[in-house]
Length: 378
Image (tube, rainbow, N blue to C red; front, side, top):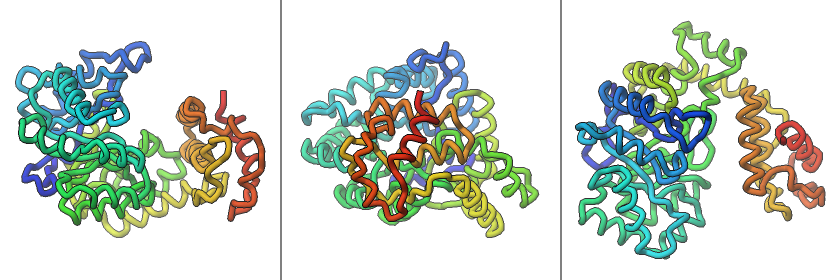
């Protein structure tokens, strides 16, 4: 296992982190974790060098933290850096920060959390936690020994990411989505570089883009296999991230023991600058190949937004394009169901036509939203 400096904190973490968000379940019920299998997986990972375990308040409908607490009994707690996250959407007053932390400590069966994050920060949540003086909570929690390092996970534009980092001088780390397809998405590569330049450790989530980069179409694998090294799709993704020296931890939400073993084996081979220029060019070619499969020529410029009916127009088009790119219709339809639950899906388009004059690509947006609804909707 490779270990890296965790920013300016003075500790070293395993490059592979265990994300307890996609643990094995019973009967397909997300809330019903297969405890025996999950505990076996987490302990196997720790026994083989993983020292970073990440969970959160809502994972597995509130049961992930309980499971992780059980897995870290019998001496395993002292072998890892434990990370969990404050459910900021539930915090209504300053005292709630500590209330939820204490609840989480009880569920995790520990007296402290090593890495504690403000969960899923965007512009709205950032303004909220600032008004509730989150920084005082962090400072008090550190003094009381309930947390060691303060961080945040992020889902918004780069400009917001930079604002958050600049808005609190005592951040220890951050967590961002990054993979070779999402270099300009949300914080992206710019965010990685900026956070590292400020001394923050950077934890990576969605390294496989929700599993899509683990199941590449054969046409794309033919491109990558040109280097003759026989790397799997997963190894290509992990090597791309590990190639970046600013990356401290790559989280993987592992669901089977086979995935745990494969990821540990791969991460034992990954070091900074492990990819040649030829390898990097093949990744760029593979990315272009995937992007060429896109059937809706949306650049996600956002000029069509906001939609009067609340439809996330670029989001629907992105979901459809990625469904086609990765030939992942089950995942695409699952994503569309979530869009529907949030009332932002193509199903809510009223064909008012307000978006038509705003699109620089001259897309017939209402007709394309119909296509998305028909092919991804129930």
